[in-house]
Length: 81
Image (cartoon, rainbow, N blue to C red):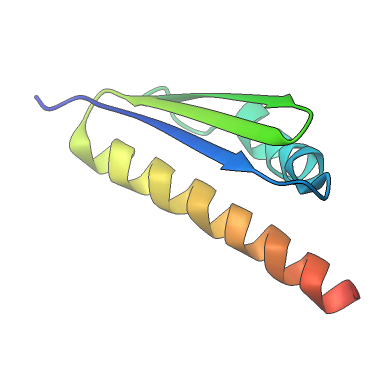
């Protein structure tokens, strides 16, 4: 079985890292599967997401979900300007 691990780091000077952190934290806390575990951390201007998965399917699904939520957060912020 193929396992997966990814580290996604986003640096932003407009405090967007904190906003994105708060937006995706509920998704991390309510993960529907034990096949993938995610850790999210924020430090000033940097958001770090670590995804560990037991198999390739859950790895792909987790990465795809987090990238969509991040992209959505940016789109919402841009729409509010």
